[in-house]
Structure formats: C-alpha cells, structure tokens
Image (tube, rainbow, N blue to C red; front, side):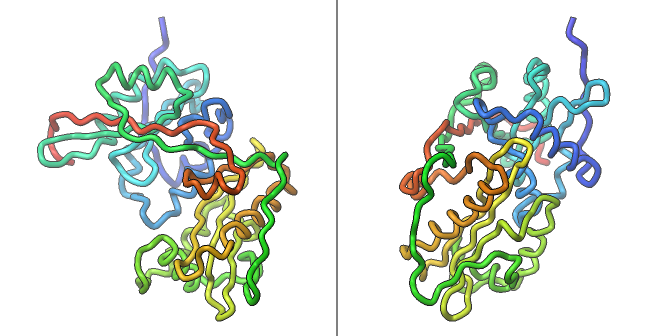
Length: 301
C-alpha cells in the first residue's frame, strides 16, 4: 500500500531555498521537469508581474522531512506546474486535484486551470487527458550546445558591450526593457522594479550584458543565469529597443553571456522559442505544452 503523503502550503521566505535546491536535484534533461528550471523559478519570483500575494496556494509534498513534489504557478494563478522526484510520480493525481482547488482562476461562474508539461512527459499528458484537459498551446524549447561555434557578429560603430558589473543604471535598464518588450515609447516611473529583479540569490551582474548605444542609452539587455549543479545556462530576459533592432545587438549580447557561462562550466544554454534562436544555431529539443480545462466554478476566489 502506498504511503499517504499530505501536502502543506508554500511559505515564500522560508521555502524558496529548499524548492530551488529540489528543482536542481530532480532536473532531467530528457523531460526537463515540465521546464520548471531553478533559474526559471527564481526569475519569476523577482519579476514585477509575479503575484507574491498568492504563493501560499503553492503545494509542497514532503516525505521523511524531504521535499518530493511541488505544485506552483510561474507568475499568477490560472497556470501551473506539477513536479515530483522520480520516486513519487504516484502523487501526480493528488497534486492535480490540489492544483485545481488552489491554483485555478475563477470568474463568471467558470473555473479554469492550465498545466504546463513537455511532450516528453507521457505520464502527465495521460493524466491530463484522462481528467478532461485539452491541449491548448505548444511552443518550442530551444538549446544551444557549447560544442558548436558561437555566432560572431560585429557591433556597429559607437556601440559598446558592458556587464552590470561595469555599469548598472536601473533607469536605463527600465527604459530598455519597457521599450524592448513593446510596452510603448514612454516608460512608467517604476524603474525600481529593475533593482528588485536583481535581488535573487543567484542573480549575477557579471553574467548580465547590456549593449550601450552611442547616445548612452541601453539599446539591448540580456540576462543570463547559471545552474552550476547541472551545468547549463538559462537566458532571461532578452530585449532590444525597437529603434536598434536588426543591428545584431541581441546576437552579440546573447553570445557574450554564453561565452562567460561556458568558461564557468556550462555545456549548453536554453533560449527562447522564436525563430531568432534557430537562426543563431539553437536546436529544438522538445516542446512545452499547455493543457487547459474549464469547468463550473464552486465560487469566485
């Protein structure tokens, strides 16, 4: 008979370090654990869009005082991840039930939940299909193996490559990311959120690259994270101001970060799903899938 393992609620300040370590310990390159990577988890926690007021809805399962599973969202309720260690996959049905109760978004008499998996996770996909979820979205997961030569692009005259160790202007970072993610020409005044994004325990200014324009503005920003335990790099975020696009700046910034992480022992780098990455030599290794289910609500939350 399988031992019953109860769940408890996530306590953000207390539990973040142990969850980060758990995600690193259970990392598998074949399935990617639904792409809930430790740097992904940490980056979300410092992102201005992250809902830190609902993290008590995350579920943790522990056996013998050891974390063995987690159900959580990336940015907000409505979409979640279910990750276990290899010995406790039998918890997945209970985890999904808990996630439906705790992590669904409810409105207009309907309750909905999306669950992210990869196409390599047959057990999770079968469970979701059995429970009435339907495939709603697919996107490529791309990786650049460091056995390949790095792209070589020359910066236009007047532009320079800096790390945040060299210069770290949060107002310029905010303007670059605001415009680079197409929010408009005039950034809001919340530049301090960019300092908050540097507050993660594994954030590294020396691995974060900016391309400085001739007028002193930051034209491109590339954040780079390193999972030292598993030997890979993770790019997040990458953005170029529209006025400076198609100059090769993103390629230069990304390559700078990859070269630094290779020197620190990384063997490959995860990038985004856009074709830009394919053009640089990133290879699709699997697909992320979002499965969704909508049902009558028991009441708005």
